[in-house]
View 1: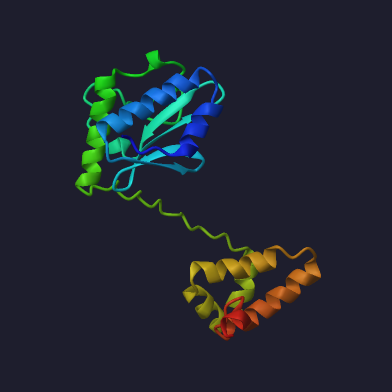
View 2: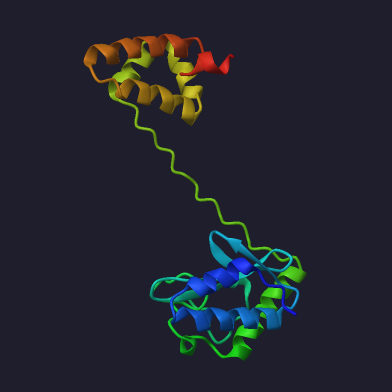
Length: 204
């Protein structure tokens, strides 16, 4: 007997008429392919877990979606999981009727493959970190003021990007010229002492 979650029953019941048979059918296939699966709700969507996230489904105003947590790792020689031009969420694009789905055999195959990935403890590769291009534009008047104080110039050069940015933003955001000049003078003095813009808070 499949272990079901009443919250998913409610989601299906509230779905549009076109969506109900799609969701009921997909739910049935998930339990058939992975009897040990557990139903839950994640991000307000119907989700299925087996040793971690497995797959999930959702119904919208005019379409449904069904997606695997590790779609990128699933074998797909016939391209059923290929990226869709409509950019719909899920592994099979926009589903408006049962006819939009691959055969039951194909779907069950994908579910079993997803189950095996979790059995084997295979995880999605970490997303590569996109290196932030740290280019800080320091106004000429700031550079000239700093260079007049050799110690301040040396300290500022050795400062981290964040420390430099804090000072530059503090000065350039001044609304009036007198305020800007006052901040610039204070900045040179603090920098010469090796202090960051918010040194008072850091020392507490």
